[in-house]
Amino acid sequence: MASSSRPWLVISALSSGVLGCATLGGAQGGDLVTLRYGWPEQTAMRVMHTVDVRTDWSGRMTAQRRYGMRLGPVDEDGRRRLVVQDVEILDAPFPAFVEPLATSIIDAQGDFQGIDPLEDGPGQDLLDALPVSPRKKAQMARALTNGLEQDARNRWNEWVGSWHGARFKPGRTEVVATTMSVGTGRKKTEEVSAEERLRLDVGVPCSEADPEPRCARLKVVREPVGQTDETPGRYAHVELELVTDPATLLPYSSRVIRMDRVNWAAEGDTPDYHEAVHVEQHTFLHGVEGAPGQVASVGFGQFMPTLAK
Image (cartoon, rainbow, N blue to C red; front, side, top):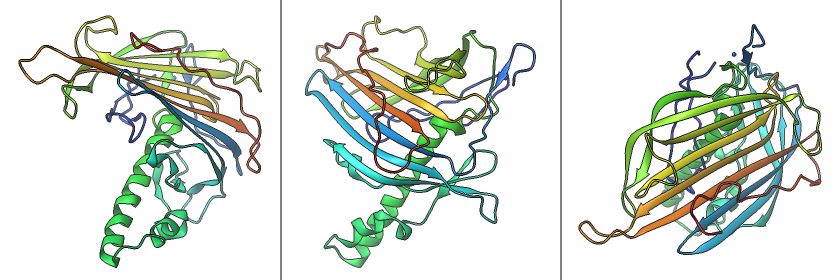
């Protein structure tokens, strides 16, 4: 397998940060498949974005929004802009869920190159409405810009940036050594040795709306070495499932799950373990960018290890 150091990051702002390094492999040469970036000119789609959070101490919260995305023409530097528009908030129990979504800058190879300046988008309107001093507003603008850029980078890498040029043997699970963060207390984590299992299956239906079996399903699972959800004690699990067109990396659905089991007890006290599961789903309806259309419903609960539903 060829190796890739481009990271995919899960559930920005809602879970512990997990940065991974995927070692990958494939183009349809021999029995290998290469994932290629090649979004068509003026690509347009409608996106349903859902975040589902379940904990054993506060129950369940679900946030939903939908929006349009459009990939613009090539500029003089050979880059294109992925513009988010027509954002509709359906439910937002998390404050971060109502923050604006930045316009991403993507190069010809499919790599993320940054975001448009804040003053060019709705983020500036948000700041202008706040009754704070110019100095405080400048600090908030820098923090908001950094957060929006990291969120946009994570999102693009999850869908495209981490995978273009990656080569796989379909149906075979590859195991890669890596690390991940595991909670050691309410607000503490540590990096531990982990393994990442990657598998690509081809010839799968793209979506309910587009059942033609021309897509690929990439599944990546990361766990501490030697552990599963049945292992007692502290634990973490991260999982990505991406359904995409392998010839272009146009995504049809992307789901990221993170499960954490953390001991809240003070050192020396009887262990008091608590569990949380975060599920983030993007579902894409292609060829639509105007008024919200119907997006295939997405079910949660496929992975809820030991946590009561």
